[in-house]
Amino acid sequence: VASIAETVATVEEAAREARRTLALRPERAVTSPRRVLEYAAWVLARASGLLSAEEIMKRMRDAGYQTTSEHPEPYLRRILHAHPGLFRNEDGYWSLGCSDIYQ
Image (cartoon, rainbow, N blue to C red; front, side, top):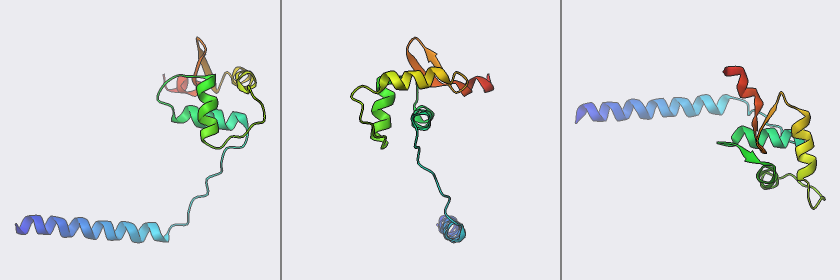
């Protein structure tokens, strides 16, 4: 029992120290995506697999992207095709193309 109490005390002290350390750090500013290119990269970086243009656009809108177009997917596809070093197309489904760097 004494061993468990000692372990709990050690963990609690480590947690207090971690909170103190985090409280002293300045917050990191994260810039929100603004352009279609940035939103698409943001969405695909968080996707667990390939996504269609329609699904990318849905997730972009869920993330705050606003458009007045009723059908923005054709424009999104043009942007994705225009950046083959960043985006990869596999039979109409998209992923980040930079994963090739690690293969």
